[in-house]
Image (cartoon, rainbow, N blue to C red):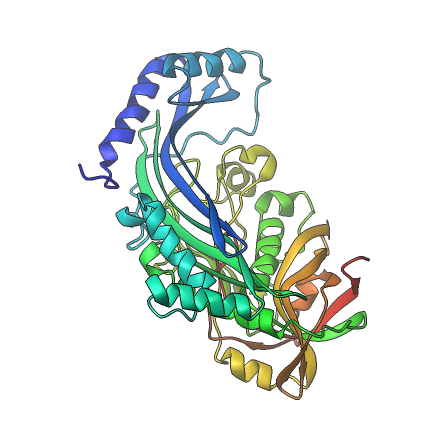
Length: 465
């Protein structure tokens, strides 16, 4: 077997071995995963660190007369038999769980999404990541080799810019099996270039995410970051208050992440902690949001932590809230079926969507900016915290490039701002002016988002208060 290529039977055989160790003493489900993650960091425009980690892990959940317990181990640390015995011993001391929904039945699952795995990305060497970093650091450097790189780097430094960030590659393989007969397997890879160019006065950010390292365009991400950094001079303060905004994809991902994770979580909904009112027009009609781990534009695993196959789930259609995410536990309580959104330890967290799309619109980012008389362009949000899940009021900061738009032109850089804003009100009917055509993977999660133009966003002060 070639390096980076996987045989599904290897991990599935490990799952079967663990189930054999449990035997008839309990119902059981087993997850075995294998992964590699490698990271190249750079600062002051030079690579300063390469790290990599490879490992295999196993997790078993057992149910003994309604008493549930789990145990896990690194396959390099302790034996599988010891892990199984720990789980069985723990189950004897647990109370009976009256809401145990039972194991996932054996049903057909779709194959892993085409394009979600790339063997070259799984085993990418430091030299491959270094090439992406070179292109980011010196985005005007042609082929970014030899004298071309040196000249471009000299130009960047002479321009007063330095770069910092990381390039990450890795792969993940997962097998699942339970004592009811369900068996599943999938694998994915992921490559990221994310960084900033920094001027004496401000930063500009750029990011790309893909399943294949070959699809990363470090130069394009670097040009974007450098352009924002060059604009970040003679910065001004923007007055607190309500501003028209253009949110770029990275900031839109933060909105989607908090809205879907808190609002469309069936556990939160049942407990009265969700803003969602199914069947109501809660968002602007221009917005359609769905979760689909099998969409080729995203990096998705075809099943969840309970062994339920995944598919498309429409959460919002033309602004109307249409569905909740379920695991087996919440589905049993609601009298419906699991939607494939279980996570490990989900008894507390509930079902969480991880492959969220905001359907792109029909306006280019350039046209969107051209339509703003006076507003702010936001590159990214960070340090965001939800204050009230029911109203989705969130506070956080802008970063990596905030700019004033006047009469359709980006005119001045703006110092970072703090916002306090209800995310659902930001997307409410009538507040969404336009949705961009530039949908892409963005942020740290597997979310696909375009640029958004909103009529109003509330900024409560500067970064210091």
